[in-house]
View 1 (tube, helix red, strand yellow):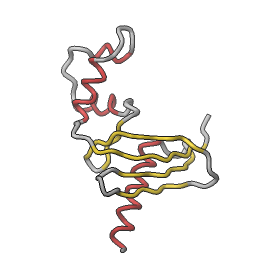
View 2 (spheres, one colour):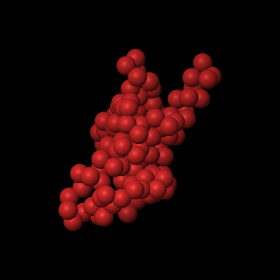
View 3 (cartoon, rainbow, N blue to C red):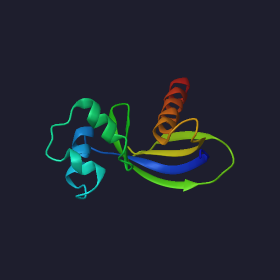
Length: 121
């Protein structure tokens, strides 16, 4: 069942590529897990993208991979806030109906709003 979600957190830039994270996830997969079927295979671009969406601790925004430091909480309104910190990390504050969009889409909406606010200032 769909419901609202609220998140506050920080996105920490990494040097990882999607490919590196996916291959790491596959190699560390437990023997009977669904990811294990991809061990010792060359993965095409579509499979890498599909598997990347299953890695909860990382997100791609504007081609850069970030580690997600996240806390789920429960305020009342939809929130799509993001700001860049001096150390290069991105902090975010999200609240959205998860039947209308997913976590990655909400992060990208917040990133777009941050970018638009920077342009108007």
